[in-house]
Amino acid sequence: INLPTHEYAIEMFEIYIKKYKLDFALEIMSLDEIFAEIENKYQKDNTIANRFPYTPAEIENFCKRLDFVKKAEGENFKREDIIECVEMIIPLTKSAQDGLNKMVAQKELFIEI
Image 1 (cartoon, rainbow, N blue to C red):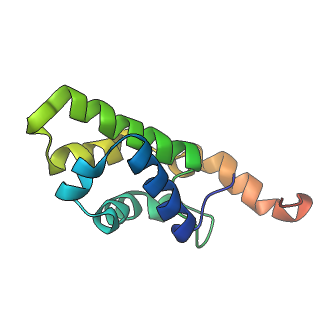
Image 2 (tube, rainbow, N blue to C red):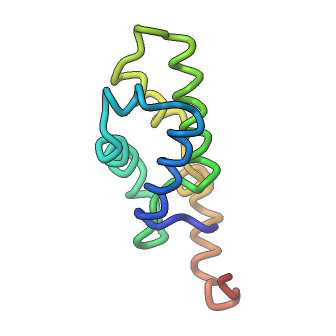
């Protein structure tokens, strides 16, 4: 599994924030605060050192979820909605932890590209 570095994850979030027009969320929570919520919830389950717990697809799904919730909530969108999105997008590092641990243990058998 190819997890992004923290810096690359920031770049991906910035792309999707622009694509889905999510600036409203950054008025409620900064990107650093959103990252802290994600990392506090999921980093302990991440067996791949120095990598952000969400895959690129999960970052996009998180942003899509924010967009969906904003459309549903309208002006009532709040900080708790962002935190709920973090809880809804469960990373592979948590949901498929056993399989990932086996792959990481066999890392020397694979060539990283």
